[in-house]
Image (tube, rainbow, N blue to C red; front, side, top):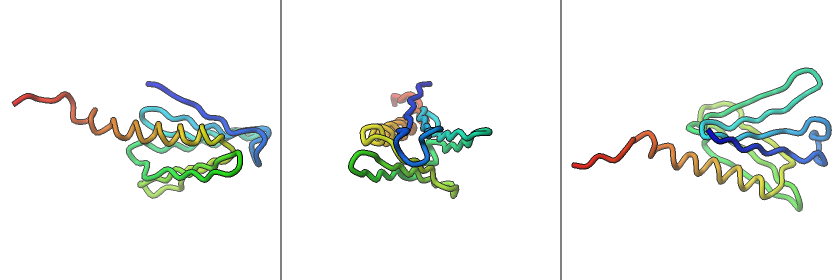
Length: 109
């Protein structure tokens, strides 16, 4: 199981002391936001990810990952444009590979 982590910039609003961390695995997307006492973690299974919306500015990008399961979307701001595009690329590639893995090996007639 491979995991890629993306940390928001400390120069953006709300990320100075405890920057938001997004982790993308082959099974789920996890947003981890630390606080003074504890942390806030939200995850969405890749099978339930409906869309990934990226809003770019001059330097930073905002990411909104929406779920088809009816839960609140994962939102994070302050990532680089390259990191936001990489997150979207990873999610789409894992989702494209998931149906092939579920089918199993090809059977010959």
